[in-house]
Length: 596
Image 1 (tube, rainbow, N blue to C red):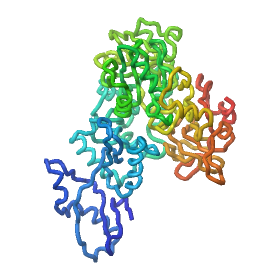
Image 2: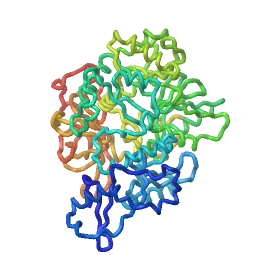
Image 3: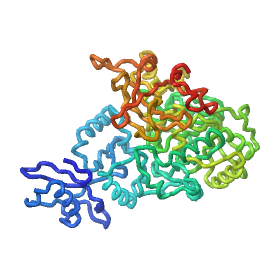
Image 4: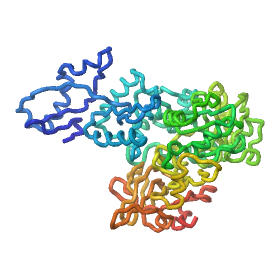
């Protein structure tokens, strides 16, 4: 029996019962230099156990008449994010870890042992276990002080209801952008990713900050209108989003070693003219995404790679283990060297044009292009014509000593164009309504470019072999067994119904075919949009079948949100003309989606 409200569990034990629980005020063991060998000899602490004992007696009152045989006081290991740690060390090859079971070792033992054994024997597990991978952590999570404070927060959370978008409160403000204080003073509300503080949204003056911070719900959140105004500004004027947390590597060589190595390790063709930016996947032998990134060619022998925030350890280890051991080839993690500002919106070109002498027009600065230029007084700013949202704009990679100056210049110059700050919640809404998949949410080591509509990021005939090429050629010939699909909810009431967040079951003609991987409200469509993978199984044999375009287009779909199913329209390609001009919901004919 598990009683989450009482924070206890109860089970049979040698003719009686055994009960324990997760107290709200846990005591960290290794705080006063205590040796780990002493953990077997902890003293009974009835005062500490009393709240759990009271909960047990409330649940089973007859126990009042029985005798307590023994109170066992023993430690348990917890991790900074409540998930166990498994996988190969990023620094010592062949050294595998399986630890930190968060008091669920018996439950996880069989599966964890199976996947780690596969990892050790085959080089990879048979399922996606990235949420448990050791490489999701870096050295910053090894601080004793950080661990002591974080695991004291983690243990009580074991019995708490976690609402969408909740955040840890301990171990914060560890990694911050140079703009942190400036943004915080303007109403930034923060979340944490890989130890890095990132803005969720900005609270306008006059809003009740306390109520907003304490808002926790599975329904329409209190930040709905705030994010909507940020999205509107991204589409109609210009916004700035601090994206400094993204992982950034520089790879260079004295000869052609850098190009040759990257051509082998990445699926797209990187032998492009200097100044071009390439979106590409770093694939494994099965064609799955180990990383999804953008690479700019800075010079003939130098490349600048931008990856998701939580790729910092994983991507570094993956490349280090596969790049040739050549003193003429170097790779440097420059994440900390650059502040990244995302300048989004149709007026972004106007703001940047007034701050730089370099021409910014599409003729001189086409899409997926990179230039090093001056912005204000600052030299050496790497400007790229990408936004990671599908909206027009630029990414500015700024040496950290210039960050505050460039930000101030951009905000001052942008005032006449309606500039404002925005956060990652707006970014999320924009990218989902544009059908952009993100690694770690939609893409993983078991997802291939062919399955998520990214064939254009693969050059099968680029003149040399690359990792995953054989698997992709086989999929191209034989078809795929799952397809990344966009769903637009039709009969969902945004104000009254529970929201989709991610992980909701997808039904096609009444049969389960997959689950969502990302969800967001589209302020343009004025509907919820869900992204997810659809599979096809033979109704009689259960055999996995190829998923064709006709199979997707000819089905009737529903998304199950907490037991209630909502009708949804499926779409395999992003909207093209819909976002050129703002349209009201009643002008959009949902029945015509499949023809666009």
